[in-house]
Amino acid sequence: MSSLITVMSSGVKCGIKQTIWQSQLPSSQTFTTTFAPQLVAATSAETTIKQQKAVRSTWEIPGPRSYPLVKSLPYIVMDEFSLPGNFHLFFQKLMKNYGPIVRLENPFTPPMVAVVRPDYAEAVIRATMENPIRKAFLSLKKIREEAADNYFERKTGILAENGEEWWRVRSQVQTHMLKVKNVLTYLSSMDEITMEFMNRIALLQSQHGEMPSDFQTELYKWALESIGLVTLNRRLGCLKPDLTENSEPLKLIRLVNEVFHGLNETEFSIHLWTLFPTSSYKKLKRSHDEFLRLADRNICETEASLLAQSPDDDRDITLMEMLLLSPGLSRKDVVTLILDMLFAGIDTTSHTIGFTLYLLARNPEVQAQLQKEVDTVLGDHQGPIMQRHLAQLSYLKAVIKESMRIFPLVIGTARAVDKDIVLGGYCVPKGWSVFIVNMLMGWDESLFPRAKEFLPERWLRHKPFGPIHPYASLPFGAGTRMCVGRRIAEQEMVVFLTRVMQQFTVKYEHEDIEIKSGFVFTPSQPLRFSFMKRH
Image (cartoon, rainbow, N blue to C red; front, side, top):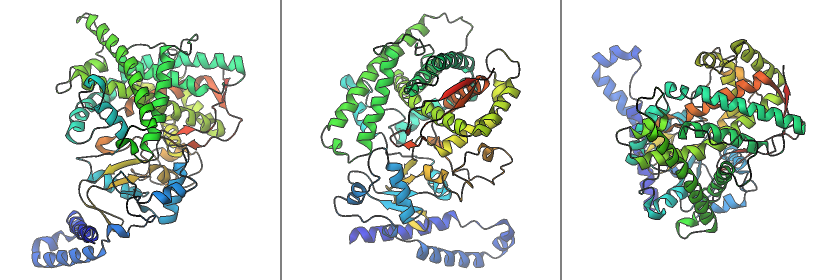
């Protein structure tokens, strides 16, 4: 009973705060505001009372029944879509049954409200801008905090940290990583890697008549070689034709896959591993520790090569050097960031490329238009892709945006609110999490007309299908916690698709590809594309 009274009083507080946020009068009422303060005061007091009455209790938010101790767990485990690989369908059904704002509670985690409206998303992002708390990667955080020999010094990096420790690192690294000029430093080298991969595609096409069923692994190699270039400033040899299963690049790729699989099991389950080391937690720890061992050796080798270079060398300073020279960042801060970039930069870009190639193959008219743009922009240019080329590839960038709307990499983004807020007329108390189900907003016909169709032109400047709410599609997140590797990933994908469209026409004649959900979404079918030479 006392908890109910607390929540109801929180609802009144939410109403008062909302009144403060919304109390500014339109400019047309400036005269009244200036010369009739008594009237304004009376009007404000009346508005406050009405809004207090309008704000509804947290427990009135629609959602599955919550029981003592087990909370909403019976509803979750009994649902046909709660199995691994299908939880995006679980949320789709949940929001369909209960509406655009749903309360869902789990044992061991803070209560959660899921939302599927862009105005709710914007309100949450803005309300948490100064302190964007994200209750994610909790098992990874525990592993790093308990690492042998205190390797991480109990500082677990910007993926898992929150609060002051998160901002201490984030504020330093974003200056370098989100600056277009710094990312452009790697443009010609990224292009060189991509051109090598085009040769690899041509070879596989001639050998098999289409891409082999493990083509996703080939994309992992390209992604690791590209992100390794940025983080370690050197080639890792992922594209060598004679790689063995025991080679270091393939070991790194396998370990990254295992880490993501482990995170699926630990994060999207009852968090029993917080009480004792479960088998899934132990597997995640083994994969993470082995990946750390290999990555740390590569980082040390890069550091040694940088120290061996003459300070008088006429060269661009590397990202690692920029970070190591940043005041306020320790070497271990930089090492942890590079470690996270290596394992976060493989599955993400490669899966997006896989989904995009599939959409282009299934929509030949879009592919033809994209090829036309690439031909026009590159013309007879024989050298590496230049900055001026990137600036002209507007349709290609729209293709990537549309692909990430239809096939997002994650189901959404979450924030733990550090103050009471009002969403949809309901109070969401301090300490609760709000889960923005970005995937479902991208599929919403009211937000994206003809949502099931692949229509990149919807993102062009003239917006032929109407304006798009800036919070209706958030593939990289939003606000101060937006993905810090966004610029790097975007440049990698633009270069890759430019070179594919310049050289090939992509075809796909097998089963439809859908999303298979996990910590990062994956294609449901092997990527057996055919790459037909254009010239």
